[in-house]
Length: 564
Ligand code: ARG
Image (cartoon, rainbow, N blue to C red; front, side):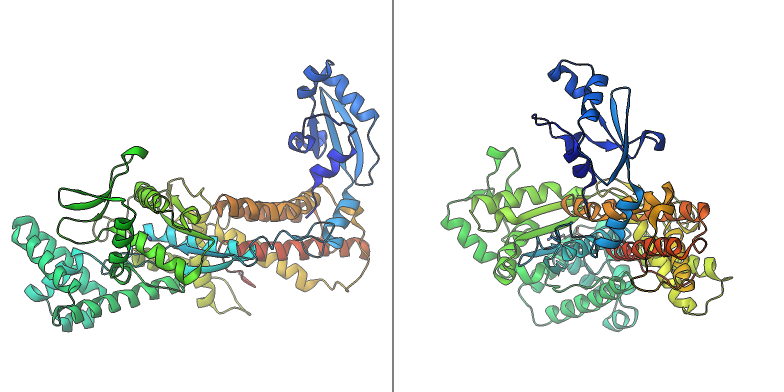
């Protein structure tokens, strides 16, 4: 990519403190050029009106073949770029957009570094709900962004396979269910038992004790109960993995809470030797009052571990396994305090990796009141949404003819795109409501609109016959074409921003803007008309656009289609 602002800044004869590059902005409208330098900041320092400052700057500009002309208007110095020269530079000379004109790439910052991302971690034996979409999809997109920048990424799923819910489910099997039914109905049976057991518990407290007792037996690897627990976890995890696959997500490591639980004594030993533990009402805690936080409870008075102690233990073992440079946890905002607390304990322990820990929180994801949200229980179940969206996708494409793609593949790709885009288009930390019906429109900011745009570009490219090394005449580019050129040039920076902010919405937004820009260009331009050099120029633009979109789609987990 080339730094247009720097190119402009370098033409200005100014050696003061102010960083010109930071001041230069895109012009608000085309008649004011492509970029402008507002000169108000200088007027105080230079003791001249901003208009005079702008005029003085204009008079002493160093010539550049990339700038066509400049104008001074109301204290602004407006720059009109040389469309031909810049287009040639960006579309032809830069073979790789992520490299600058000195052939230096920005993609190797992660070389040799390991990033672990803990995401999509469900509590097993319960249905995956629609909230899981966010962690799964944002997580996967972040993994791809880190990989783009050269990091080695480990996808970790810290499955929730620990706690009294498992005591309740096994209690349910004992009281009113059977293993046969579990084997036959899988997760549905487990969920039913859980709900029914909770109802009993509401009426009679003895059931709470029963669930706790059973769970104690699981922990002690009781020879009757433990195998049942193992089977439940196995069935439920297999079910979750199947759903992950539907979303195109797989993990490198599924070791969860129960696995790490067995190593908590190692953590307690360490905390004791560092004198960090104290006892409060029989529980072992780390006092965090000096940091304005409630104490981090490591061991309950009955001797059992807690979410925080299991997480902290897992981080120690994961560090041994992966020697990570960064360990990212992706969860809903509700868990912010949890992570803050145990990150602090890691810091107090002076763990080597404590500064590598990072919690990334996302906002809520919900559905409008209606069919899917009220089908079962409090929260909409993920499979219900997946099925509904897939049916909708089938319906939307049913009248279309396909010669290259299989219709069922198209339906799958469209439904996944709709889901993924609905999550990724919204700023990570914001809440969003997913309006399924609107998301299927071929107009407006939707995934099908993006996929359709891509197929249009492909089809033009298939029709054209660009010979390699053919000459291009970029002087035919109108402002719609040039807008695409500039956006393509900016794409690497959007990826970088998304990475730094841990927020793929920056990529999603740019991909959408590129699609809109293409459609505007397509409406104003006859691509396959003109001299052969002109056609070549337009085709080379579309080729670069296609490559950029393809990369963008991949980063936001949207499949491209060849036809639609
Ligand atoms: N299982 C937890 C939940 O469903 C999320 C786990 C996130 N990862 C972690 N290492 N704590 O809320």
